[in-house]
Amino acid sequence: MRVVIPLFPSFTALDAVGPYEVLRLVPGAEVLFVATEKGEVRADSGALAITADAALDEVDACDVLVVPGGEGSLAPPPELVPWLAKVHATTRWTASVCTGSLLLGAAGILDGLDATTHWGAAQRLEAYGARFLPERVVFQDAHRVVTAAGVSSGIDMALALAARLADQVTAEGVQLAIEYDPRPPFHAGAPSQASQPVRARAVEILREAARG
Amino acid sequence: MRVVIPLFPSFTALDAVGPYEVLRLVPGAEVLFVATEKGEVRADSGALAITADAALDEVDACDVLVVPGGEGSLAPPPELVPWLAKVHATTRWTASVCTGSLLLGAAGILDGLDATTHWGAAQRLEAYGARFLPERVVFQDAHRVVTAAGVSSGIDMALALAARLADQVTAEGVQLAIEYDPRPPFHAGAPSQASQPVRARAVEILREAARG
Image (cartoon, each protein chain N blue to C red):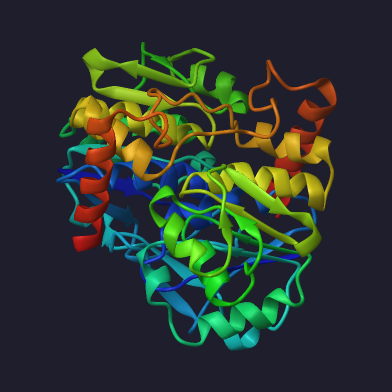
């Protein structure tokens, strides 16, 4: 089972690495990172780069496509969106994390579907004809599509996907292998939970990070 | 504020990328990935590589040291452990995720301290003179040391650390920025929660992953 994760300049690393760490442990899965060209792809912070082991034009099909988000999703390499549309036609599952949903949207994959994305991108998602749901993970089983909310949500998404790809005992085994028993020290992970000062601080932090 | 994350062959990617994604958003933080030599370092899966942007011998000091784990922590490059001991002497905080704790142990940093690690490594941790606590995150404030449990726990650890490095509103702002409102689809993330078949499956999964 081939899992392909496309990277692009200014992707968000945890969007990609959360699902990678879950799916790479599903027996029989092989993960492949791809990009316009083989080689190092810098994340949004500038401080991290992941290697793409194949170029987009070397991959025509896969079982599971996982599309991360990040600032770079707003101005992707021109070949990425048509490649997503082409490869999506071959997948068992096409998944996005965070603003990776905007890339699926641009590829026409979310038109008329329920979907989610980072809380800051809901309007942009709806511009692609999707209906935004403020949920952690939104499965559209009939369309082989699953979208996840911001950044860290890819772990939850990938565990639910692992149960569909393998079985529940395997998915729970992966959860235990990565000791995913989250205990956030604060209760501020969604806009509905965070105080107004925290919401304002999050917007500042994201703005400052985007300025680099 | 300089955050340094050492990589080594066969590290576990999420151990490093969870804390990276939190700490890089703390205003004023600059993250640097380092390794024996500059360049690509392969994770335990073989399918992912992160670039080290500096060599160990280029870095003598930092504010925050975050040590990931993974299979490679059992046979680290010989220069890594003395480097950890040296740099630890300069930090405000030294942190580990998963079996990164074994590297801190080898560097003599955990002797006599309470600490945690991946559930599968408790005995090995205690061989370094630490007292294993089956907790998600163990702070030893007086010693500037914090250890986290398996793989995904680095996110919880880094958020708690962010509050100490900055302030709680900032830490909560980072939590909201990465939308860390975890909703695991199953209740199997710790040995005490998982059923016997799931515990057996996790051991199989980890064994198969280690065989590559």
